[in-house]
Length: 445
Image 1 (cartoon, rainbow, N blue to C red):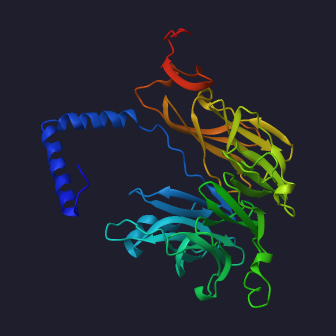
Image 2 (cartoon, rainbow, N blue to C red):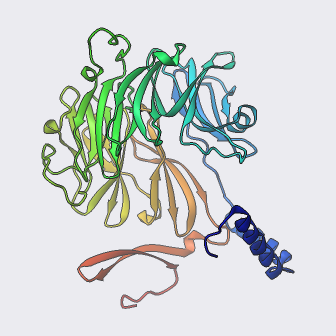
């Protein structure tokens, strides 16, 4: 079909297409039901992992799904099993007309805030902009909406009932970071950072230890980060001659084809970057370089003071980093296969987690907001397992829990999954093969 000239023409085309499909499949309803039942049986989940729980401030926080499949944010006292529902996505949509996007809890656990986009007639949130809904929390279980901030895109809590959020301009570009004191009018909000470059997109996050906030001004091929201490008081400086710039520190100025991401750990910044070998060099970078894991002192975070924290070989590529109080978990690709390295900061030692399926799988670390967590959850998929997950103890490196979803008609023990390396011109291409265990494979096949 060519591009329709009107919505009526498109609707008529879709109606005719649907009618054609019904005519073509006429008399096959029983077969369709049989195939659907077989597919459901073949992908039936054996066990489902429980929600990832985060313990903080005497409470355990977690996310679950309700009967209708909507997201429900909950908490319970660490010493009890009584559940307190913070927000039910289905109820928020039906009662208040919002689509729930994300939720965070304040440092003192007395309130929480969520980004929610207004729903339209199609029951879909069409706008990039969201409202920031702030609720108070009580021990008795009462949840009360206390205020709504408009035109918010992302946010992060600060201490003492403060919240920092980004706002959009007329082109739907997040360009500014605002600071807000909960309970005060939005007109009193402080401008923390403003990005004049129309090519840049601004985000606000917080380090996992909650000591610093990070302002990330990024493009498609570069990033420029600034940090400020989470206890900065941007309202005290208003009207007294001080500049907010005095409280915000630039880490490394922008460079084309160079990105970097930071977190804070044990008195220094942990930096994942693909900058040149000399971090202070701003010579032209034609093609993006491999990522490295570097460190910088908290008081001297500039690029000239960056040093290597964890080295990898030329055949390895760092893909992701997760920081914990005692450990740093690094996801690596080694000749096409995944590896997960655990660096123990206290012992200054590194070791690898033993992955299932002999490493012939994809690995996705689950986000873990709890800084002092002693375990990490990884999700896996392989040719003989649709999805599986496992939790590892970061001290012992042992797998302490596992869950799998395996097609019922496939016994994974009957199959072999292996990787071969196939020369192709000047490069070697890694290939994953799956075959019955009893099959004989010739090296020349």
